[in-house]
Length: 191
Image (cartoon, rainbow, N blue to C red; front, side):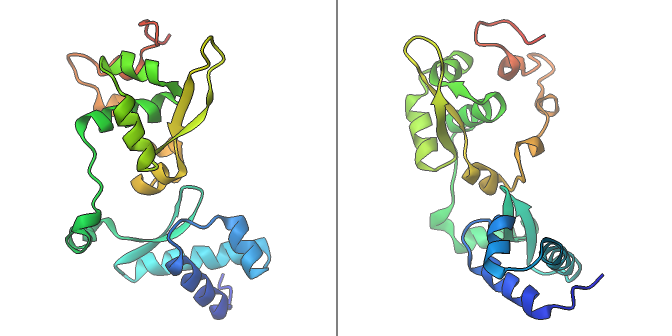
């Protein structure tokens, strides 16, 4: 079914192209003042057109919104263009980010317990890169901060939501089982 509203698709494309972050459906609907079904159809048609035309970009639903993004197979050329903007994560940052992503909400003490080292600096850096945010305080004495991933985390890794994270079993080391991420803070495995 064609929306027969090329101006709507063109306007959608212009807005999505100019936005530096994914735009939520409700925001697009408020902007264009069209019926839900018409907007959904226009977005779906744009997604199909981008996918079929073998373009250098795609329209993706990511981080709770829609965004025009570079196709993964052209990443090498984008990296050449933006060498100074490349975000690299150290092993410590990757470990901490994985713990936060899979165990959130999680305290700094829990992260340090699982990693076996101080993680304050790494957490600070992940917050500066807006990959991690404070999501609350744990209801225990001292009320430690709870950390979770941010919307930018989803955007950075191209995930629609956290359910798209790879299964931990895919990364399991046959010797350790890589179950340290699945271990409770008190050292007992989940049952």
